[in-house]
Structures are given as structure tokens and as C-alpha cells.
Amino acid sequence: MQCVRVWRRAAAAPLTAWIQTRSWSLAAAARLDLSGIYPPIATPFTAQEEVDYRRLEENLQKYAKIPFKGLVVQGSNGEYPYLSDEERVEVVKAVRRSLPKEKLLMAGSGCESTRATVRLTEKMAAAGADAALVVTPCFYKGKMDSRALIHHFTKVADSSPVPVVLYSVPANTGLELPLDAVVHLSQHPNIQGVKDSGGDITRIGLIVHKTQAEDFQVLAGSAGFLMAAYCVGAVGGVCALANVLGQELCELERLCVSGRWEEARDLQQRLIEPNAAVTRKLGVPALKQAMEWFGFHGGACRSPLQPLTDAETQQLRRDFSSNGWL
Image (cartoon, rainbow, N blue to C red; front, side, top):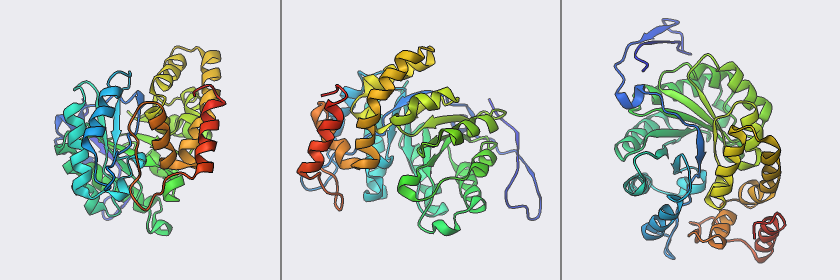
């Protein structure tokens, strides 16, 4: 267990380094094994756009039968920007009540300000989260350089009662967490990994390479490049498609970990088109529609997200059926 560790601050006034001597709680100091597959679960809503906790519980009962390492709650696919802080915390509490203790619960706690992120991270920990997934603030993205982001994530990690996982999702934020910032932050004793959703395999490989001296883990942020990420040293994935094809994503993980690359390649290739359909091509409305086809509760999105058009629904069905999933 880590107790004392040198931590270099990005802001060098007046000292250029300091010794991190804070007595971290057991939850924060102990290393979490993040390896495995996590669905970033969708948030089901009623016809009145209220969180549908009954449908959420039914989904959780079905996910309990799949060998996931845990669940990500309030990630991008949970429509977290459209939920209030109170709703975000309540959803985490509901999931924690249902989730077996041995399963990890990673809760999205990122906000635009550092102050708000610190407070929400503390609330997520109190609600039962094992780790906080913290997305890059991006509204003033022109000023979100390495200096600003290192300062932000350091402040959050210093205060968080649970380990922090960095979250880079440039498709949504328009901002990629710079490589030098990831490497710097990997030295922090309470920052234990990164979810990288950008899909640049050379970048993921470099992160693994440049952080190998640290106790730092890399998670692929999408099923479309999961095998490639394993090849360069990732330990798992947080994959939207796992909401729909969870067993298949866990099988792909098993094949990669056991070195059965030819079988893994065949499975990976069949997952690329449906994954693209529920992520960059058609997004959360498509994910929720596909969940309905596969026996889960997706339901409607919260406005202003709109349901798929008939043409989009037909395209989504083709992307799944042409690869043998429907």
C-alpha cells in the first residue's frame, strides 16, 4: 500500500517539489485492480423524463449475470450532463445497493469547475463509488492546456476519498487530455488510471510505455479498438457496446488475455460496425434502441436528445444484423 510518495507539482511557486505526506484513507491509498470490462450504463427514463429506477434495477439484475469487472455510472452514455447533481448521486446510490460488493463501481464526477468536481467526487464516494471517473473540463477548452488540467486533476485527487481515473473523450469534449499531462498525473498516488476514448492506438501505447514506472492502468474507451488496446498494454475497457453485447465483450477480453489472437481478431472485426453505430455515428439514442432489441431497458433519452429517425433505425439494424448479432 502506498503511504508516502514524491509528487511533483506543475505550479512551481514557490517550491518545485513537495513530499506528499497526507495520510490517505485506505480506500484512496490502496491500489484498485481496474482490469476487465465495464459497461458505462445508460440511464432509463420514464415518459415524463424522470429517472426510471425500476427499469434501472431490471437492467442491473441482467448485468449481474455477465462477468463484468464492474459498472461505470454517470459516464457519457448515462446522459450525465442532463442530470442534476442530486440525480447523479441518487443513481449511484441505487446502483450500489444492487451491485455485488466484489464488483467495482466507477462513478462519473466530473464538472466544469474544480470546486464543483471536488464536491461531487466526495458525494460519489459517500454514495458508494469505489473510484471516480473524472472527465476533462472543456467549456473554456482554449484555456484547458496541460498546466490547467494538471492543476484541476491534482486538486481533485488530493481531496478525493477514492481513487481517481482520468477520462479523455475528445469526441464529446473537443479536448484530448495531453499526453504530457497524463504522464505527469500518473505519478499522483491517488490517480490510478485513465479511460482513453480517442481511439489513437499509438497514443494509448505511448501512455502505457511512459507510465510503466508508475502504478497506472489504461482502459480502452470503446469496443471498436479494444483488441488493439490490449495489444499495446491496456488492462481493460469501458465500452458502450457492453450495454448490449456484454457477454461478447467479456469473451473478447478473455481471448486477448489468454493470447488467442486469431479468435480475438475475428470477434473484434464483427464488433466494429455495431460499436460505431452506437457511439460516433448515431450515439446514445442508438445505444438505447439496441438495448431494447437485446432485452434491456433503454427507453427514451432526455431532451434535447431525440429518438432515431426511421432511416437511422434501419441503418442501426443493418449494422447489427450484417455482423450476425440480429
